[in-house]
Image (cartoon, rainbow, N blue to C red; front, side, top):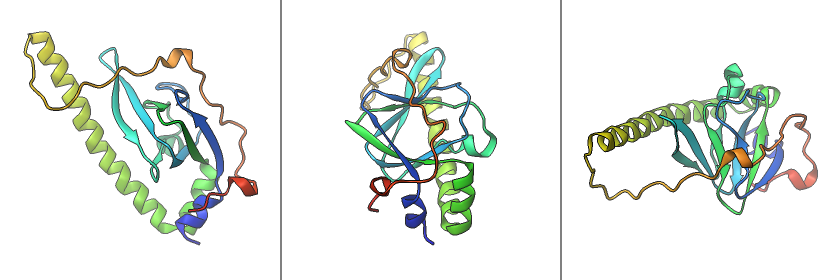
Length: 175
């Protein structure tokens, strides 16, 4: 069985614009996700400010640290498109996908390594910009300023506990 077939078996959730899937620092529920439709943004507290690290686009996995070591969430995830359709990957479905689709682990590992480099670079740039601002240095950049993130404190997290890996017919994506 290939990766597309494995993804088609995932339980699905749909979340609306402005909803927070999870918040940085909260205990993990042991689930990672695959984005089928929509766009999500990743925010992280850096030096007391919410900073956008990057966007998650369709076809991406995220939240894998929850599967590997059940650690608290490393960042907050907010829906920025009208809606986002996500597949839920719990530990059982992760193991099954790994066995049925060896390319899944390779793609996941490759993407995790790429994101580590991207995130490290982004955090360094944010800290440098803040240090420069403290010193009174104004950086000339063609990169637009990040918009402030939505207030995550006022938006409830999406409950994914208790969901199963048994999709209904309408949950199966046409990938």
